[in-house]
Image (cartoon, rainbow, N blue to C red; front, side, top):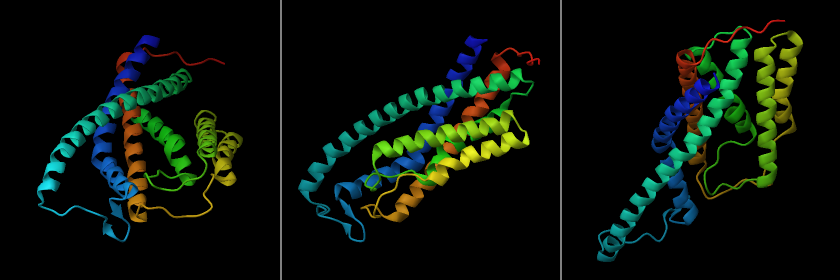
Amino acid sequence: MTRQIFAGALFAGLVAAALAVVLQMWLLVPLILEAERYESGELVHFAGLANAPEAGGADAQAMAEPAAAEAEISLIERNLMTFSVDFVMFTGYALVLAAFMALRQAAGGAVGVMSGALWGLGAFVALNLAPSVGLPPELPGIPAADLAARKVWWVATVAATGAGLALIAFRPGLWQVAAGVALIALPQIYGAPQTAEFGGIVPPELSAEFAARSLAVAAAQLATLGAVLGYAWTRLAPVARPLTA
């Protein structure tokens, strides 16, 4: 059974990574590249272009051609690196989801495409939605609190939210649901590390658009991962017998 589950996780990770690259290149990368232009000083908020070369000049054209070729090579390398990282990351997520699916099936629950998509959305809540309440996705050039403190809060939030969702899903009694809700709310009540002042060189409209798109992309990626894993599960994994008391 382990080999079949691992094969299903690899397949689901491959599909999710391919979707991730497409969605990121379409919806997120243009915003990141735009933010990098503000970070480098090429663009200035409320001021438009800063020190831009005159259009049509011979020097500008001579500089543009090698720069365009270098940018194209860099873009290809970035896409390959993004796909590689996404494949490893989503395969890891798929293996964790597969473990929960095995527990669910062993307890007598059904596992399939729809239930897999719901598991994927649960992973989205734990990994993306809950942490974004205190630490929304950020573009380059955005001031932020201490990195170590943000990492600790992020890990604690993911762990507490995941544990809370597991209690609600596997032990749907009144006290278990109450404990699950309390676990999910605890890191939000404590609060994420924040900067003393707000500011930055990137327009807030760009930051808001990036945060919204990032959450939408993450939801689509993880729901697809869960659905594909559920499909592979029904095709590859043998039926586990329910747990007996």
